[in-house]
Image 1: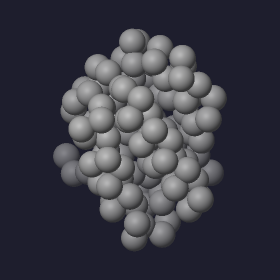
Image 2 (image 1 turned 60 degrees about the horizontal axis):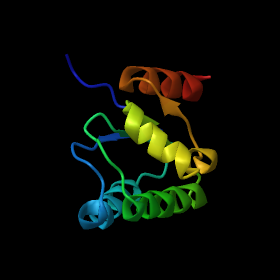
Image 3 (image 1 turned 180 degrees about the vertical axis):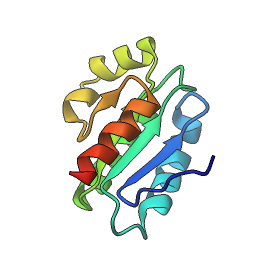
Length: 118
């Protein structure tokens, strides 16, 4: 089957833990991906491969979230593992999150596309 594109929703998958040595790389990749997408309203980061997020990565995620927010784009997370979700809650990142945390990538895409189709 062919992929269905929706210009308001972009999804990326992170396949490793986020820590000081790759946090800036993630920040650069995200900002490069969204920079020319004028219709984009939602970025979903699929976190199924993330087992740990350190303080440096949290700082980068916050920076990404604020940059996206200033462009009218909400940051969402999907498939966040329990220990990582605990880290995000403990750091108060989730209270600042401009979007939602979805249990599955499928749920994220379905709900966000439906929201944009309304």
